[in-house]
Amino acid sequence: MLFRSRVDGVAGWRVDLAGTGPDAKRTVGVMVERGGAAWFFKLVGSREAVKKQVVAFDKFVQNVKWKP
Image 1: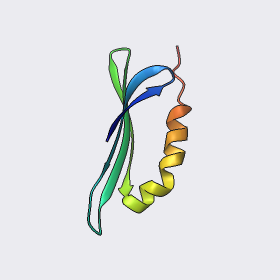
Image 2: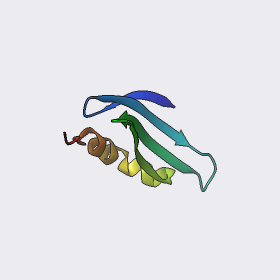
Image 3: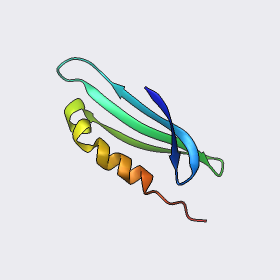
Image 4: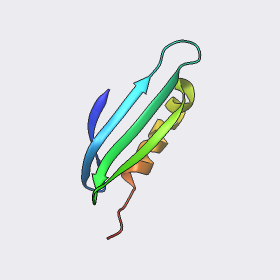
């Protein structure tokens, strides 16, 4: 799934992809462009591990502050 997102006021995208099956992986990522550079924040692991950490990941991304 793809969602609009923001990192310290900069518009970007949040992606949430999950595989299927017993060893399935899940990836949650946020992508933004700032100052001509692409920034990626990514959480990858088993579906269960990512499920346990996705709230902390979202809080981390929400607390990113760009230096002037």
